[in-house]
Image (cartoon, rainbow over all chains, first blue to last red):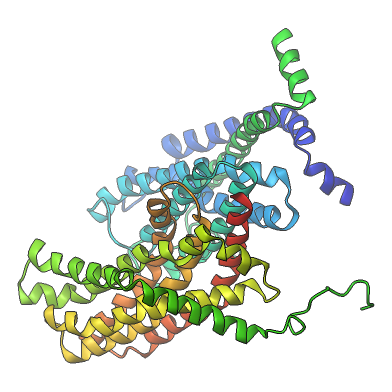
Amino acid sequence: MWQIFHKLGSPKWFFGIATRLMPWLLAGALALLAVGLVWGLAFAPKDYLQGNSYRIIFIHVPSAFLAQSVYIMMASAAVVTLVWRMKLADVFVKAVAPVGLVLTFLALFTGAVWGKPTWGTWWIWDARLTSMLILLFLYGGAIALDRAINDEKSAARAVAVLVLVGVVNIPIIKYSVEWWNTLHQPATFKLTEKPSMPAEMWVPLLLSVLGLYLMFGWLACLRMQTEILVREQRTRWVKEHVLARRAG
Amino acid sequence: MNAETRPLIKPQESGVSTVAAMRAVFSRDMKVAFRQRQDLLNPLLFFVMVVTLFPLGVSPEVSFLREAGAGILWVAALLSVLLSLDHLFRHDFDDGTLEQLVLQPQPLFLLVLAKTLAHWVLTGLPLVLLAPVLGVMVHLEGNSIAVLCLTLLIGTPVLSLIGSIGAALTLGLRSAGVLLSLLIIPLYIPVLIFGTGTVAAATEGAPVGAYVALMGAFLVLAITLAPFAAAAALRISLSNS
């Protein structure tokens, strides 16, 4: 157990694992997203109330889902950074923060596009929308703080503190639609209940969510590898790796 | 615990109890602040000026001001606390006092709590005392003004406490002021929402007990957690410089 833990902390070991894992992640992501999105966007039945405009759910829900999960993953990595000072956790937080920012923006943007035909407005100051906007600010703040501190280690630890302080926002987002009576509909998927939509709608949605998770995994691996190469550029294994790539 | 593993100096043995150290930090901060009185006045002037901008810039109509007044005062108070946060650790950081504070045998988070309390007494409390005057100027009614002052009284310490984390994180950085705002404003939003929500409920004649209790919960949460985060951030910033 502890051996695995120590190995996990080694950037070199992770680099190798990620190289082997990435083709699978990408293939899975593309397959799931292709099936989920084509099924959802072209073949799933029309909504009796919203017509075809509801189909944006197949992009909106996966990106909103991921936007929150990525923050939780970042917060978990932040704990690891502060408690065990594991290099890889620093790399993870730095690598995925911009991805989280983009996903949050995507969720807000698709939400606005969806809101126009169904609610008749691009934006309302609803609890769910506002707390997602705060999430966007939190990602932005974490990235800005990371850029402002030159020393890598201090930057990682400072960002970790900030990310952990911001984690109070996550339950607020999650439960905003249940605590407050808002325009936004409640969660689509719950662990304890069957979805309220027909299977032809929720199965492609679930596939898209899983596909986007895999896509995120691939992207995280790629970005972490890049970051590792930059950070470890003076070590021998990176030099050897780069030379081998150039030769091959 | 045997003799070898015991820490060399325990707080009691250093001659100064934790409470005495907190009191010393607090009174020192007060003394330093009162020797630079202009720095104390600036956030208050800023507060008044921001409030002045709204009737002039948006509308001096009584109906608009009565509806928006509480929000205007809250936003102005929030901004002026934000403006004053840069001073919280900056001078002590520049002259090395902060390093001595970190080296004290007393727990750092309690000393940070004392500093934050001093910051609130010097900036938050004057804002609360000034709020009734401005409340009258934006045509709020008596009951609304009382509730507004109550929410500011509970809310401004939360602003100082959350702000102490941001101030500690951005210590010694380039363009720290803007960065501090970027980091802290998202965390201020819930306090602002509930602060103005309470006054809105009071204006409509609805009971405000639940709102006030929630704000009290924010305060308790901030007092218990923020000093730990701020102390951790201070250590990081000091090891960075």
